[in-house]
Each structure stands twice: as C-alpha cells, then as structure tokens.
Length: 252
Image 1 (tube, rainbow, N blue to C red):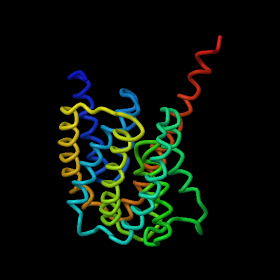
Image 2 (image 1 turned 120 degrees about the vertical axis):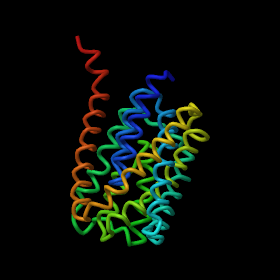
Image 3 (image 1 turned 30 degrees about the vertical axis):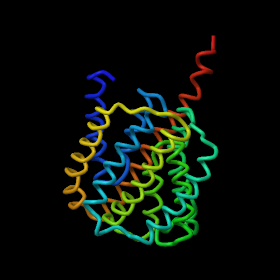
Image 4 (image 1 turned 90 degrees about the horizontal axis):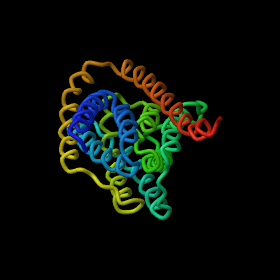
C-alpha cells in the first residue's frame, strides 16, 4: 500500500470515527464504501473490522455506564446463531450485492408498519434483529444503520443507544474479522495500516464525545434518521450502477 493511499485512508478513518462517535453509525458505512473501492472485498472487510473494533471498543468504554445489558444480551445471542449458520456457507458477496444489501436493509426496516417496529427492550426482537444484523455484517461489512433502526424503535436515550450498540458491535466486528480471515477467505491486513486505523479510530471517537453531550435526544434521533436515509440511498445507487456496468460495456 502506497504512502499516499495510506494517508488518504487515515484521513477518511479519522473523519468517519468522528461521525460515528456522535451518532454511533454512518462513519463505518462510509468507510466500508471507500475500502471496497480500493481493495479486494475480503481485505476491505478485514481492515474495516479492525477499525470498527477499535472505534466501538473505545466508544463503549467512554459510555459504559449507559450500556443496557438485557438488550445487548438478546441482540448478541441472535447474532451468534446467525454466525454459526453462515460459517457453514462461507459466502463472500461481490461488491454490487454488498452495496445493495447495505442500502436496502435499513430502509426496509424503517418501512415496516408501526405494529412491527422493533423494540430494543424486547428479547424476541433482540434475537431476530441480532440474527439479521449479523447476516448484514458478514455480507456487507457494516450494520450500523440497521442496528440504529432497531434501537431507535424503542425508548432508549441517545447515550444508551450509542453505548449499547457500540458494545454489540465489538462482538459483531470481531466475528466479521474471524469470518474473513479464517472461514470464508484468507484476507490480509497491512500491519502499519492496522496501527494507523486503530489510532485514528480512538482519536476521532474521543473528539466526538463533547458533540454528543451537547445534543438533545430529539436532535440525535432527527439527524440519525436523515443520515440513515441519505447514506442508504447512496449505496443503493452504487449497487445498481455496479450491476449495470456489464450491460453498459456490452452495449454497442
């Protein structure tokens, strides 16, 4: 990896860690799109996992008092079941499929009728969305907007959402790292880039803390919904474009 590319990725990691530090999402979704554009899918997934493990781990440590153990336990149990199932399939999607799943899953959950909206404090909902989220994690590399859609459906405050989601994501991204380095593919990670990724994640997350403190729960929810919709729409368009490339190239 060239020095110029490493510097560009470091700047992207710092900015996305800052964004995730405020909203608990969106940063990872943007970062995986950048990594997929410049690296093979498996390598991008592995480096992204390291970055997000550092970012979410530090965020969970900063907000550990607000973690909801009951909600986290149900969500992680559902994710574990999905991980075991996918370990047998060992499927690595192409970029077009990954982009489409990345964009459509959060929008699909948001479109559910009111009676089917997720509630983070219900165990059955935690198991279901934990399994769906782990599937998204392994197939697209990220799941932040989907988890946020899940947690936003209940009555948790912004600090509880960010803290509990970060705790869950530590396990999710660790599982993704194992999946792409030991099961589905033999991904490789540049050790220097890994160290840079961890440092940028910690710095960006730390700086973002004061901004989250300054927001109200209403502001947090409003901005989060806007970000989920906007970023999801971008990835749907990217996925459709990637699917259309062979047709466009074949056209006279």
